[in-house]
Picture 1 (cartoon, rainbow, N blue to C red):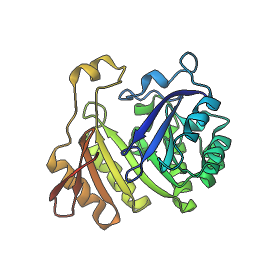
Picture 2 (picture 1 turned 180 degrees about the horizontal axis):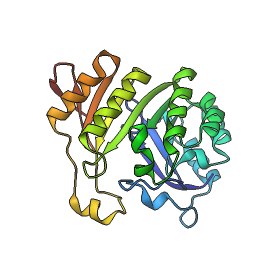
Picture 3 (picture 1 turned 120 degrees about the vertical axis):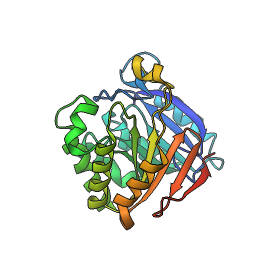
Picture 4 (picture 1 turned 45 degrees about the vertical axis):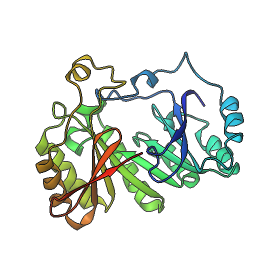
Length: 249
């Protein structure tokens, strides 16, 4: 396990759970909007996994869950064993992943209680966003795997209008509706932690209400859309396009 960071307490990395978040180093994709770009490379700044485990022992009875995030946790050869160790301490186990390695995901799904699966773009645009040809096939195969597993999951998409046009986002909504009936969180781009100079300088993105309503119309009754325009605020979008603010602690 190459651990690049640890958040001692989060209520948003696994909505509804008091969780610690373990940030794993390494990622094979190069999404321009990535807010954890410093974790892409292996190397300096890694925390020994035994040290993290020792700290988690002091949190037993205080935290409900541990979420493995990144970077991309699926690149960690010790991920399944780390999850077993955490589960053995009485914690629920969550995973944030892009689904870039379906075989690796299959090995750890039995240890997961919840998965936040990043869905980057419609199939046709995936390579443009990730910088890796064929990445869309892996992501959608991973979605199929997660659906079949029965594990609770949430789809997450980060959106910036300079990277993904509104019609492409609507295309993605149609693909999501055809594939499953999920909770889909659309996160407007946040510049914090982004290494892309132009995107970072442009500041926060904003999902217009008309676009939120159009996306939910495409989803129809096949899914629930939550739009997060700021890091601590989300909007629950209903079929009629009515927005109810829901603060995320």
